[in-house]
Length: 186
Image 1 (spheres, one colour):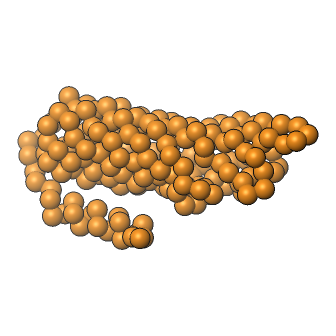
Image 2: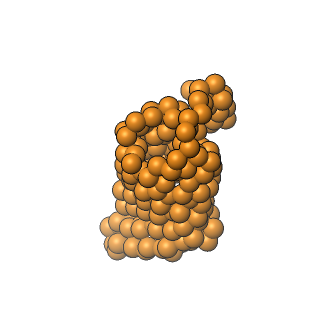
Image 3: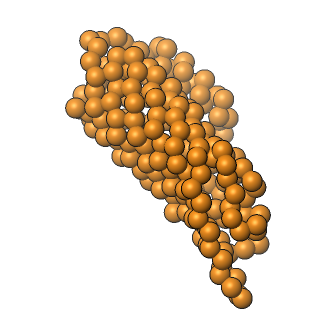
């Protein structure tokens, strides 16, 4: 199993070898994707679904990225139904360069958690909107109107509290997310 550092190093090395400059122009894109949350405060890896809408020029771009994870929170001792939604505005540094376009991404926005704990006596429920951020790297591969997109990012909520005092998660929320999808370019 590759470590995260090796994966990022491999992505960067591949980007350095495969980048081929081409005429500079801005591309709008819609990128539906599926991925997995892992590490950090996740108990188990959890699948997420989402999409990004944005544009990418020759050197930089911007996107609005939204993701939904139906089963983010888990507990070894409690029956927990925990959902996670992220909506982030991100700056993309790297630009579209034709066949292979690596980028670095960073941004901030909403991390919404919804936790329901089922018990024999009473059900408890809490929802929280937190301000958070993300940082990561990825790439577009393919020069046409449809391309492959993949990235890995670290997400962090800056003011998290699960609202239930049940130790489902600590007072901070941070996790990794890897996604893969298509980029529909125009």
